[in-house]
Length: 161
Image 1: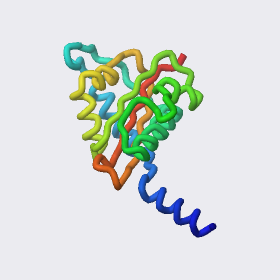
Image 2: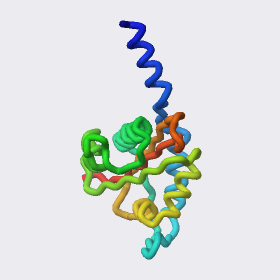
Image 3: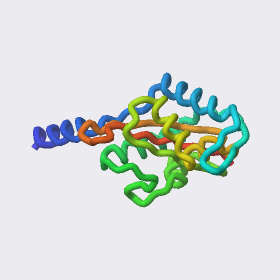
Image 4: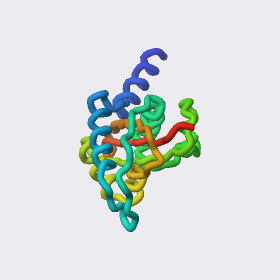
């Protein structure tokens, strides 16, 4: 029985590698996003003025990590959690008291530079990044080596109450 459970656990863990974005990648993501926010930008049909700099928040990073892991485990890129949760509910679960919240997700990009660039090319994701109502962020990724996308990303954006 122990061998069976150990084997099952080993197989499960090998399918989905839980990868919190490293502190170095956190800083790189923050730099890229703040660079984008430092200039006016057009996101689809909407024009945004430059926005103030974001800061990193560990509770938002934890919400992003858990959602990235879930997407990787189920090979599904979505804003809705398997339990029906919304981005706001996931951030609240981590103890973050917010006045505004948004989420960007992506799959398939191998680097932080690629994922931020793809979000900036998407009008809705770009609008989330450029919105002046957000002051903090957390970002994470998870890997499913058996899936065609491989890497799943979540960016949680929010402002505290």
